[in-house]
Amino acid sequence: MSEIRQLSASVINKIAAGEVIERPASVVKELVENAVDAGARRIDVSVEKGGLQLIRVSDDGSGIDARQLVLALASHATSKIHDADDLFSVLTMGFRGEALASIAEISQLTLISRTADSDAAAILESNGGQLQGPRPIGAAVGTSAEIRNLFFNTPVRRKFMRTPQTEMGHVSEAFLRIAIPHPEIHFTLRHNDRTVQDLPPVDNWKQRLTAVFGCELAEQLIWIENTDGETRLWGFAADPVCHRGNNRMQYLFLNRRHIRDRSLQHALGEAYRGLLLHGRHPVAFLQLEMPPNAVDVNVHPSKLEVRFEHSQRLYSQVLGTLRSKFLSTDLTARVEQPHRQPVAGPGVPDPGGGESPLSSNSADRTNQSRLHLDYGPRPDVDFGGVVPGRDQWAVSQEGVGVSETVSGEGEFAAADLTDDSAAPGSSSSGAPSMAIRSAADATYTFQGMQAHNRYLITESEDGVLVIDQHALHERILYERFREKVLSGRLEVQRLLVPETLTMTPSEVAVALENQDLLHELGIEIEHFGGDTLVINAYPTMLAKSGAAEVLRWAVDRLITNDGRAERRDLIDDILHMMSCKAAVKAGDPLGPEEITALLEYRELCQDAHHCPHGRPTSLVFTRQELDRRFQRI
Ligand code: ADP
Ligand code: MG
Image (cartoon, rainbow, N blue to C red; front, side, top):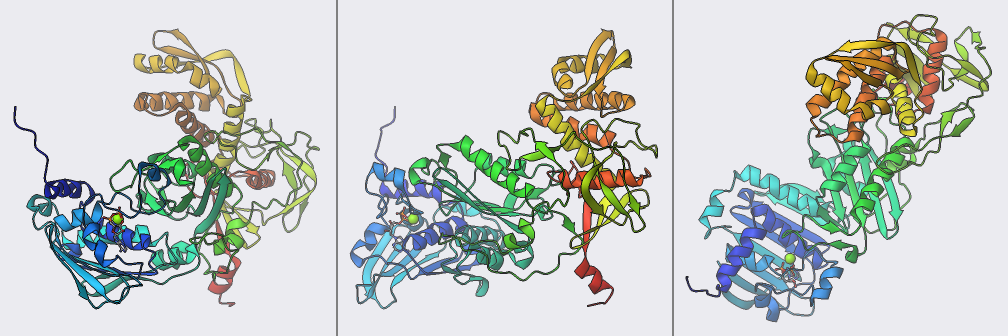
């Protein structure tokens, strides 16, 4: 057995550095966090060769007393906590007292600092942990840390460094993760003597986001805000027209510290479910504020991950807040975004706060139904345990019979589609359609022109709306299917003579294993023997031939899934398929009543703007845009 020995401080620091300092970006993160903790109003970061050659961070914060400089470089030396209890009330970015000691151990470091009540600054140098100083030097109040030749004495780590350009990418990201949630601080970032970022102090968060990401993205941001107990959630979620191929534009901050949290990221993805195409990721900037004792930030060396006391509740808060915001927001895709001048919104009582200029114009326009239909209470729709705010949904059963009036310009009496109205085959034009009853006093004005038997062209408040009839009908049916399935009110058509269906043995097995799930979706099957199944009943909203097709598709889906997807996701996928099957197709001619019916139902959709697969159902050509193109303005 070999002898047990106490490791030297130098080895301990190198081990800690291995954990905390992965690359130049980690140094930037630690130094900038220290500057924020020191109450700086301005923080300048300068980097050469991606930080491999030089990193300099200067601030105008409180400074370090000359007598404490050596201690600042010692391991486990911090001014931010005193005892273990303090760990549960950490409000500063740092608290482990390891960063400076680690950095000093693996680089050549020069620390210059001066407090407000001392006449001169002091300088302390470290060469791989060997200290020189401190001695007096002239400098302004604040701290400047200069790091040269990072990893010079840890060659293995140095070998893992990528090109300066790649390292600079990481540096920029680390810098932004702190600069974004601190709009009151002036931040600059220079690389090889070129200014990469200059972010002057601003008094609302939207302005900081605009400075970093540009006007175009900022214009797509929708303000969200919600308080649940002691937890406040606020920030911006981008309109679904704005999306990315990865999740890097999803920023989550906890008490102004950037964090990653898989559960909350999932909640975000769920909130955009059906609004984005498969494989696309939403853009969001969310802030969480909660008492420090409701979260453990001491579970990850660089504090990127944290542990929430009430993670499930938080999940629901994020999902519910975003969902109900989307429900009350006009998300119609615009053909060309008119350039909107930001207007000041109501202030947010938070130093980093900022109301969205958009929230006062486009983003907050609710689904303005001009119809006066008598809505019944809407059964709760499950959004993962969250019930969105809109409580009026189901259309009244008390229609007053078919009596649409047609006037020359295409003004139709509004149609009231009752719940049992979507029986297949009721269309005068032969396309699957919905029975129609007029509502007493509502009118819906549109230029009833179906183009190419696939697009509906109508007028909206701010322009001309082109609707994809299949996509819209699919969305309408999907929402109705889902609502009925969730409330257990799906009407099924029983077959007097059951339909038989031949499948492979494994398909038969999977279908029978999932009999319950299929039953929930209105498809009732039985084993006929051998490789044959019978369909005894299918959802009324689906044609009989459609039922067999949906069943085959569902079985395929269940086989490829192989137990991986959650039940809810499977149901959702099959609902998508059912609505796609049941919806009018591109190319189906529609009668005026059907067009009216579709437009009517559009007003009642939770999300009329996207088909269940995330494609837009309609595009707006704004009047302003048309006027511009026709050179009227
Ligand atoms: P921690 O931030 O976890 O306390 P560090 O090793 O990063 O540990 O810093 C050690 C101590 O040095 C800090 O607690 C703080 O008192 C002091 N310090 C570091 N950087 C600065 C700075 N830029 N301005 C003022 N004080 C600083
Ligand atoms: Mg620190």
